[in-house]
Length: 212
Image 1 (cartoon, rainbow, N blue to C red):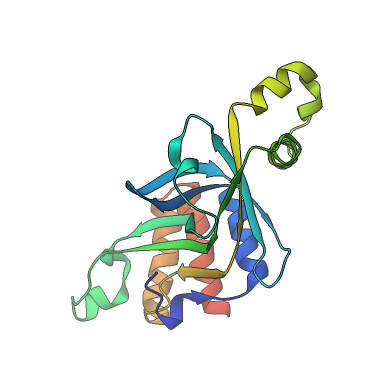
Image 2: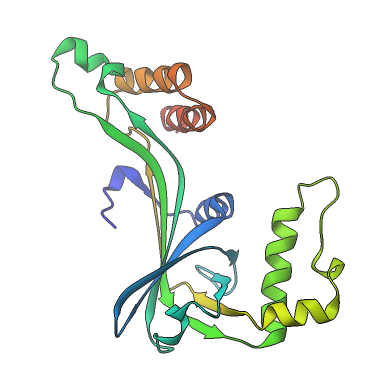
């Protein structure tokens, strides 16, 4: 992705944390029929280093898994908090008027060779990992083992797992770092005042750029 230095995030633990926070990603592959994409939750494993591994599953009826070879490079994309930024918040608007709208956002791209598989044990491990991750915050978490074993085996036959060892990991934290301190202060205030919970999150992230 286009990655100006002031927006570049290279800390692997920060990138992995953002992937976990995003939860849902987009898996893109290139096959004989062209580009295909699926929007799926994924797990990120720090091993092996330096970038780790992504795992998830898609429906067996989804033909995306049939096209790529084991050598095919896939792209997994994750979008974090994001918000529109009006130039009306900039101090520069009052000074010169030379301002335009923009968008603040977090984005992570992970590239690597993707492998699709239907081995029941590997599939069960992925389904269990995803379930435990997303059920954990609940007061009474549902577990995969709560379902009847024969029902679970039948469900596993309807999905295909994938594993993507990450060969390249990029992160973009575009949080008004290219604006003056005064302009960033206006963005922080404007997002907090006029937005909802997501905008408040972005406001806090812009504020963090001033502290760094």
